[in-house]
Length: 496
Image (cartoon, rainbow, N blue to C red; front, side, top):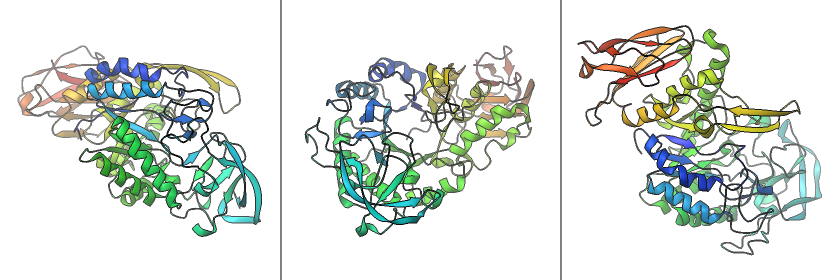
């Protein structure tokens, strides 16, 4: 893995549903490579129910090839366009991380009459009444595909639970499907313990206790890897699935990919770093994990302004406690305004937060599509009213990614000794000409940091690549200098 790997999440929730994303990727690939991006996290590429974002999975085998769920193409384009986009990414040395949603399926084709059990929604281990027969929408026959690639039929035997309303995000009125052969309850191996057991999340919940399910998914991974030679997997909703089954699937994928070092990333949405560390142990090093606690620190810091103690920004985060497993991020598709996990970082703080994830030694940063391209969209908020949102590109993101790629190497020295103004330096290495940088940021008034960057830079002149500061700074003979910063801002100092 590249020591300065930089991932871009190349989509957002409200990307236009016009089938244009794969073609946009083909156009942007050369620019992203030149910028310093090394890997792209792409959205779910298979057919979703009602042509949606991809997290309401309908057919894993349909990448925009069959007339299903109202169209041939997906929200992002056709299968051929997808394959061509990945080829173009690879041609420009951009790794491709595919989004794999294995927790649930939606948009079933037929109903079935099965035995179900009501459970207390506040304590899902507690049964309510006795099992009874009910008509449920749980049989996936994929009539548009007609058995091409796979003739596996997903029916009630493949699922542990189902809800009344087959839509994304509806968790009301769900039922556990009675499978006596797997034990008379939910899958007890899942890590999520909210409400007693968090096996069920939405839709038709895939039951990994069924060996036929696991074999079908392995067969699909074989086909998918053979088609596009992906470079990693982003696994959605990991805390709702049997971790041992996920380990089995990841081992299978590593086997079929040979010696390639896959970038596998698990989404375990929790603010408790202890839960992330526990999953680290369960996965036995198979995955990187999103640093959700750090994201919430960014959100809190952006809202509190100069009342937030910047010395604590890494407390109880994955970047602090397990940096080798950390994928750091500022925002993503779930946290953007009007989404279910809405927790956006206030705009003034985004350059500071992106500097933190991009220019430090610890963690692998994942920058968000809207941070670079911006976005404009409308949707209903939690108040039930329609809202218009415009997200503006984050200033200096391009420059910071380039600094990470070309200059942010060598020994890191931290100066986290003030509640508002913090900084660090990277000394640089001989292999990268002129490498080394100094970063200083503040959530308060204009300030400075006296910092050591190393004697290899003695006598050299440094400038602020963000152009927030216009002066030039000369490193003294001992390798020290006073690096300045504007109020509520960040400066990234590099050799002139």
